[in-house]
Picture 1 (cartoon, rainbow, N blue to C red):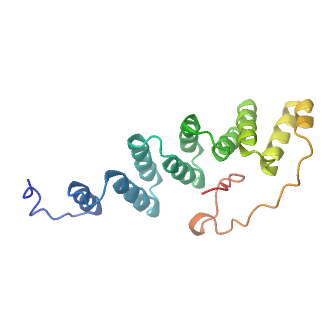
Picture 2: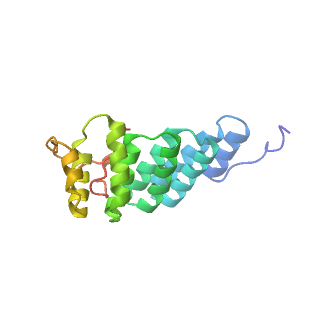
Picture 3: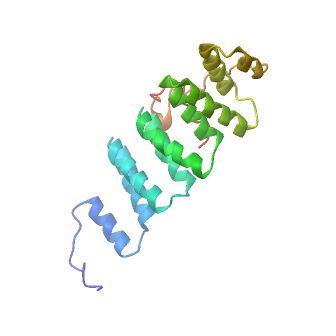
Length: 184
């Protein structure tokens, strides 16, 4: 069995990576991660997202993989790709961050009841009054005429100025306005 690939010479980085996995120099998840990074660098976001989906299927409880996949999709204005990843991760472990992203996606789609649901969930999970979330909730409740819910938000802290995202992730300007992940 050791002679199976003795004379094989890889002609691509994918073949080389497959050999590394075969000879157990790297594991399958690391290999998918390398492919995701390569595809992301070359601008093939579809291929990078496929690699993240493969990693999620192998390790469905690794929250970091979901976060990376969601950030890649959000940073490339791929809301339809980000949403299912985020919805799946909050079934495993709800976080304020994921709930906030989901709420903002629904708000951008003008699905106000869904947006409010997830932003309220983010608010409860955050354990502090996130000015951005409160501002979005106030906007939703103003648009839906739910004045009592606006009053229920209490005194909102001033919305801080947006962080300097001129460099964005890896030197790029994020392309989804208002979707600034605060945690990494």
